[in-house]
Image (cartoon, rainbow, N blue to C red; front, side):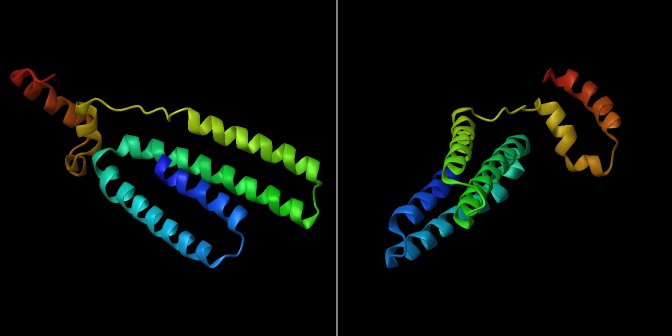
Length: 147
């Protein structure tokens, strides 16, 4: 997650400082390729193995991207003259503070116990009802003392 966020922050800073240099386009393409690979890995690998963690990460990323969108919208309104510089700085400062707090506090993750995870994500749920799986697993687990 921080890997992807760091790339987004790098893009913002490079656009601000490098303006229209030929190196900027090359760096932006490389960053896009890296973030695409990170997203692909997150979706393909982690989601299958850790659905609860992936869900929490996706919610946090959504918060982050909404804040970035809000930041860019404030900049756009300032450039268009809709708001004054002083107001834009106050709004951007508030958004920066929210982004900082988001980065400082890890997402809360509720990980299911393995039995509930098995019942919730197993392919057996296509065949059996959740209650039937609970009833069927309890005696089998007690026999092997797995609980």
